[in-house]
Length: 164
Image (cartoon, rainbow, N blue to C red; front, top):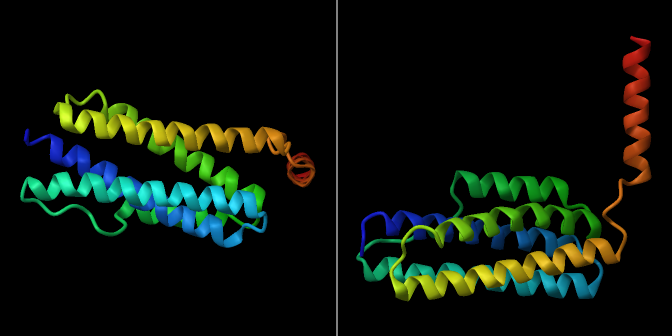
């Protein structure tokens, strides 16, 4: 296997592990059973991706990532801070899914061997499905508009700046 393929796979594995950890956080704050169930399903997808990609890394006599790297710790920390209830958990996961969708799209341009190309394409389709559901949930629940409390805080901050 080409020497630049292993780092590409390891990056995807590390990101999948980070997303799985973030989904665990998001599931922990959700009260809505439908949302919690979907987020849990997506977490399992990310764990499966990491396992399947890790098998290919091991076949190349390398050891895949098994925990959170620096980016993973940041993703996990952001999700922990941002996820306070259903709405904020889903919104936080939208950002994480944007990262994973972009990473998989880039990996598909990396000249992967045919065997890996199919696996990465299938994983990318999972990522796209996650993003479609998250975007749909945000629109369906009306979460795509600025929340009144945020608008009030912004107005207060602007008033304080003008007074200063």
